[in-house]
Image (cartoon, rainbow, N blue to C red):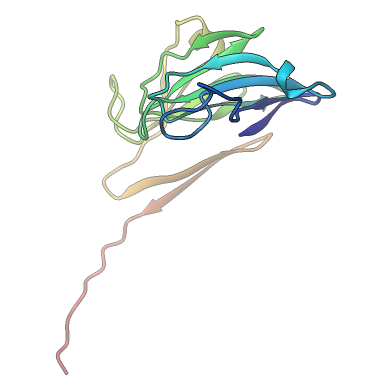
Length: 178
C-alpha cells in the first residue's frame, strides 16, 4: 500500500521480508519513505501484530492542515486508529468497530457501527480533534438514522459536509399466476 504523507514523503506498506506481512498476507509494517532515498532506508512508523488483517497510513487535510493517521485493521470488522503528532502515535479513543469519516473545521467525524454511550448504531458523531487527541473528547451527534432513513455516505469538501441518506419506501410485491 502507498499513500501520501507530504509532497516528498509517502506511507508505504509492502513485503519488506521476513515478518513484514500479516497472517492474512497484507502489510504489517508502515514506513515513511522520503523522495530520493532507497526503500530500505524508510523509517518504520508502526508494526502490527501478525494476527491483524493489515496496517496502513493515510493523510487527510482540514483547512490546509495535514493530519496523519495509522490504520490497524485488527480484524475484518475492527480497527485501531492512531493519530501521528510529530511522529508520535496517539491511539484514538473511539469504538474499534467505528469508521473514520473525515475532519472538518477541527472536528473529527466518526460513524458508529454499533451503539456507543448514548449514540445509536450508524450515527455519525463528532468531537474536537485536539480534545480527542488529549483524551478529553465530548462527542456530539451530527446525523443519525431513523427507522425509515439510513445514512449511505458522508463526504467532505473544503466548504461542506455532504451526507447521502436513503429513505426507505415500502413496496409491495404481488404474484400473479398466468
